[in-house]
Amino acid sequence: MELANLVNSTGAIILGSILNEESEELLNKSVEEAAQNRLNKLVLDFRAVHHMTSLGASNLVKLTAIAKKKRIKLFAYGLSNRYREIFNMTCLDDAISVVSEQETSDSLTNDEIDKLQNLEVKEGKQSDEGWAPFIERIEVTEKPEGALVKNIDNRRLQAQIKGFGKMWQKTFRLMIDKPEFTPEDIINKLKQNFVAFQVPENFFFPTSKGLTPGALVFIDSATPGGVVSTGIYVLYMDDTSFTYVTPQGHPEAGWITFSAKEEDGKIRLQIQGLVRASDPFFEIAYAIAGQAFQEKIWLNVLTQMAKHLEIEDNGQMVKYKPANYCQWGKCGNIWYNSQLRSLPLNFTKLLPMSKKVKEKRISGGYR
Image (cartoon, rainbow, N blue to C red; front, side, top):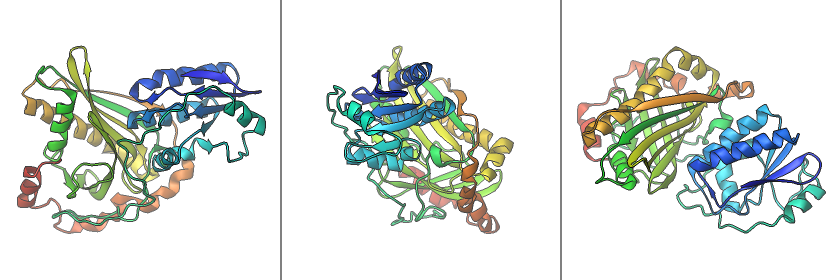
């Protein structure tokens, strides 16, 4: 990964073959260098990319926040049609303008595009392995037993860039010292027990697809503010990680990534949320009780995993704000607010679900 000057105040980052968790430092360094060189336009050249993971996409989301602070306009060049779809599903194309050789851009001159074309770049595969199929809107085709299935059908995916509140990155980690397990084993155990590891207030309902890219999982939750019925869409999955993204109306706009990797002779199980409150109502609710409730959910998952593996519960959390501002232009998201639209459910006896249904759902596992 390197920064190349084009013309005037425009530069290009020639991305490496793999865009993943480890790419963050080099990306940030390149943007810092661009700012020092007084560049105000920066093109991300994807032609050499072989594969992008969901954590690689997370790094791009955080990069948009850094670029905005430094008043640098971001562009993406050389995206395949499939990667354009991924940009659309992750809402990256709302913050990074996509350009190609065949398309003109109001912000890039012909000279700048010519300079891009002349850069020596080894073409990558731009593999979409692990990514969910492209969808414009969620379509509910199956309703699991016991699930309310509200506030998700016909909704668009809503990633961080289209959310309202301050953006948070919260990383929860559990170190596992069990030589008999591999990272793949740990992720499989987490997927199989994901439902059972939830806090008592949360009820997760996978469909018959289980946990696979493109699958829906319905959520009915008894929050401090009342019942919330919503769901999630499985965005990405590989042997050692999986990611889900939220739909419009979910309390959070963004995604959560669950991953496992070897580190210092142990296995690091990580849950990383890159999210912001989806609308002004949820931003206020988070400040009052919502953030503590969300942190409790994922710390509990690590606690339950530690018990399952019969190891010490050493789970820890680190958090910071990649973007310490609200996006006031997204106030209209409140129209889809799942908490407000779930208000009638507070006067029914649908939650908590029957003990029989819950036990049946947990015993079936989450695969």
